[in-house]
Length: 474
Image: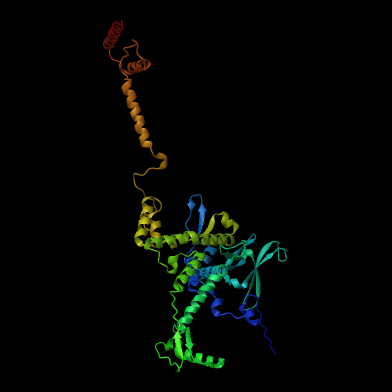
């Protein structure tokens, strides 16, 4: 004899049904609201479409992306059943819907000649509603004050406990204790439920053929059973889209007056739009991303996309990168400068014309090579394209103004030469300056020897020159 017993936690819907509390299916799932679902979809797809890359910091800057075992795990296949896009989409969906996302990193110890190291084999998503965080403040497991993650498998019923080093824990920005994040659906519970109720009202209005309310006038008295039967008869002939345009039979002496319900009078559309903007703002989603282009233009939409990246996604990406780098890379790898980074440039892609102008500016200003620009366009490298090129008139910062300094020095020398000529005799003092004497001695030394007559003639000329100078001074 096999006896099956069902178990449920206090948070399960089955427990509420056991104690007589039943809720409508729409109120159980906030994703029934299209705005809430759109925000989840936008956030998860934005994270999923950004690829992971492994870089290394060197003395010369950031090197080209390199691949190793953990990089291939992040970029190619986190586990045998999921692509990276599907994997990170599910992680972000759990993070926003439940407030926390948990990823178990399965490792295996790889022995080496001296010691060994743990190698990551694959990564698995743990449904957030099946994970419980345990703070071991008594040191029951191993080490006092550590955090453990208790996972309950809903299929096998088994429980597993993992160390914090083996679990990637990603949480929302609304986190009061730094350990557990709070979901948006919890923060905006009343708003989301109000939107769901308004949608239910609209559905019932369509279901009843826009005649959900009517007044039946009759003479006399009817018991409760007769009233119920009469109401059901009118609903069978008049309610529902299948009876639209059909004639409604009314018994003699009775009058059916439909109530004039106008959605415009209650500002139904305006209230729904306002609630949608509130939900989107809680997620950091811009109005144009939930198809609200009332106050948007083409240029304004582009700025909203940039604002979405700066104001909303930068926090999410930074959290992902910090958690992945700390728990997937070893201490030696981090000391070597290795780090993971999400390629956020996919969010800022523009039209082809703007993209080519950006690449052209980068090449002309020596920021990137031709081959680096070609790789961004998914083109092959070309020979000679790995050299930086700039305009020939450009000079280094250390040599800016050198040409002007040289020109000033040259002008100064020319002015000094014109003020003090070298070969002119000094007529004021009667004696030559030291510079004139040195130049004269040098000239006499360098003169070639001639015959004695030439030398005597030169001596006589010098004596005659000295006499004339003395007479002039007297």
